[in-house]
Image (cartoon, rainbow, N blue to C red; front, top):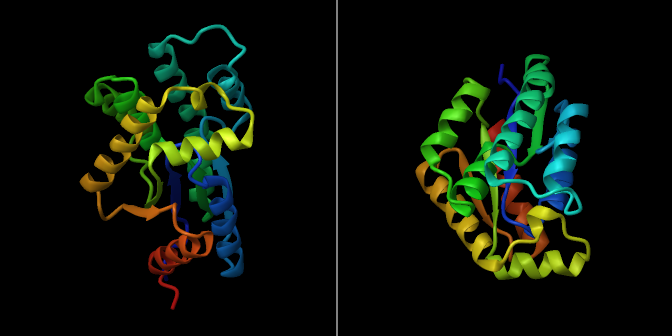
Length: 210
């Protein structure tokens, strides 16, 4: 019998439509009677959400870049131990808005931290937890930022200059090229219907749904 307790992560720079498409994925799983939860990073538990506020609230004190990196992994430790692992062990599919790939893209490529050091932290915090599939919603940085500005309020991580998000996008695409079996890159500048048709095709393949 096919194990339906899959770990699905959704990645991408700002303004690529993660929230809308996570809702689509949840509906897809519900329609196919696949028990699932939706969670997010940073966050997902009471303590991790407190860390999220430190990381994203632009009105907090300045967050040093090294503190930013370590806080993301601290929140992830709570999240993995208290939400993701228990859900998977109970046979539930986990849909996660961002995961470790985001840290590599944002803090590694964006901030310039040594990727090997991030990978070391990742192996320490996560052990062998890895997504079964990562859906990367891709768009040029200027398009994503325009969409973000159109929404109005921007959090601390959404308030960098365009060159930062260009580096982040490059990081994501490099990661996807290194793990083509896990990453599924989808052009999010397409119509929403086409984006979701692409997502459905990948999920059909993952869950072996005809």
